Length: 161
Image 1 (cartoon, rainbow, N blue to C red):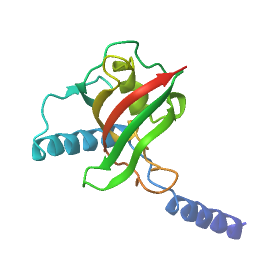
Image 2 (tube, rainbow, N blue to C red):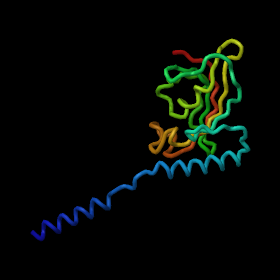
Image 3 (cartoon, rainbow, N blue to C red):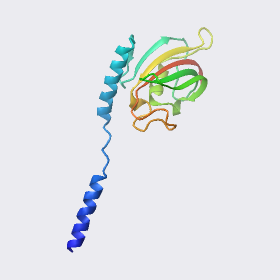
């Protein structure tokens, strides 16, 4: 009987020691906000609007016409960078399904449109907190580590449903 209690106690200690620290969304959001503020200041970035989600954006080239929706497929030229300046993705012209895009894009791209006639594109600058980017897991291909704030410049060329 003593062996069973001893073995049970050892197993409890063993499993307790293996318990991973839980991720804290609130703490990460605070860390991201501090990083974003420092990045904006260090790079002299002005005229950004902060969305209630924590996303920062600036529409540098607005275009008239209909706006992007979550159901659309967009055609865009874009560059994605980490805050240390590392470019993790640069696409000359690519198609992106809005429903599969990172949350930051899903929030911000509906702010802009493109009519393809008077002005063929809109340009948008985004600074995306990690929770609206690739989160605590990072990107599936490993190019974006976990908990990274992202800086995108996006030229929306067109979109369709």
